[in-house]
Every structure is written in structure tokens, then in C-alpha cells.
Length: 200
Image (tube, rainbow, N blue to C red; front, side):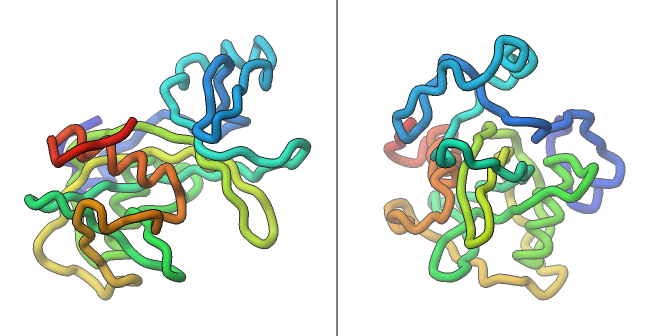
């Protein structure tokens, strides 16, 4: 991944990684809800997904429920004091980011979403990791494969933001993140820059 990719450079960058095809599960791992997922996939599926075995898994859909696949990308943006940039929707916190459009790479997604949600361009500093998050709304269950990046914002606004940008200090997030995988990504970023205690 190019270092220092900016939102005004995304047209010149493409990512050939195709994500979200089928169920992104890996045999022999343990979900963050404590359930073993050994045997949930065939030998062929396990071999096909062996290169994705570093994804963290959060939650689980009820047995027999078919999930809609969703690809997404989010950014952990920290200021010099270790505060994290979040947006709020319906009294829950979200890292800036969101769902990928058809054919869109994770890098392009996160830069586009930051500009839409925060009204500012951003620069990608590095990739933090990937996670699978199971969640549902009033209509269906989703299996979201999310890619997380560490990023920084440009100082100047470029457009009207969709959400208010809020900076939360360490410990102020509480359990306010809608997706537990966002809290995990934040812990990875703080661990990388040495901002206080973290959890794996």
C-alpha cells in the first residue's frame, strides 16, 4: 500500500484484493464471543481462505441465518494527545468510514467516507488490520469484513460534513461504539503509538 495516500490521489491508486466473497471464516480460531468456529467451513473453504487467517472475529449470527456480505473500511485518527476522532449517530460512536461501493478498494473507501462524513481530506498512514463483525438491523443480519487504517486529517475543511466530528480522550469512549471491532481497532492504534494501556 502506498504510504501517505491522500483523498485527492485515490484515482491513481487501485487495489486488486477482492474481499467479502463468501463467508470470511477461518477454522481453528475463537470468536470474541468465546465460541469456537472449528468445523464451520469445509476443507476447501478453509484452504481458500487461509490467507485471511489474521482477521479478528466479533459476534455471531444465529444458527441457520443467512448473512448479507458487506465490505467496509474505517480510519483510526489520533491527535497528539491520544484523542480519537469519531462521529456520532443515534447516540453511538463510529470511527470515520463506511461501506465500500462496487469495485472500490478499501483505501479509496476510507478516504471517500472521511471526506463525506467529516468534510475533510485525509492521509493514510498505515494499515492496522482486518476484522469480521456480525450485526443486524431491523431487516437482516450482516457479515461485515472491515479494513482498518491509521490516518490523519488535513487542517482545512473541504465541504460540509455529514456528521459532527468529536474527539474522545482515552477512557471517554466507554461502551459507546456500535461495532465492537471499532474498539479493537482503536486499541491496536493506541498500542502502535504508545498511548496508554491497551487490550488485545
